[in-house]
Length: 75
Image 1 (cartoon, rainbow, N blue to C red):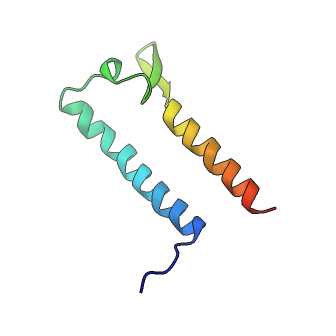
Image 2 (cartoon, rainbow, N blue to C red; image 1 turned 90 degrees about the horizontal axis):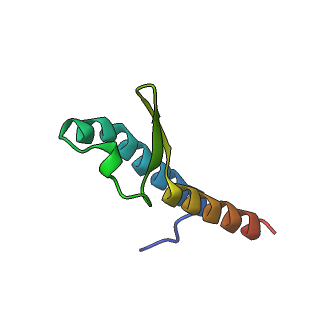
């Protein structure tokens, strides 16, 4: 039997996968991938005195959409 997955359970699984990906980023960087070579939809950033500060537009869009969905479902 396939049951409907709860929205919060789905969000929990999503954030666990996202956290695992974020933990693996340093290993990918050791393979030779430079932060400046990543597509701008995935990562936008700037280097300040040797520290790279960035954000991901795609993550912002996904989180905003999830926030709107949760807000609309609670009504």
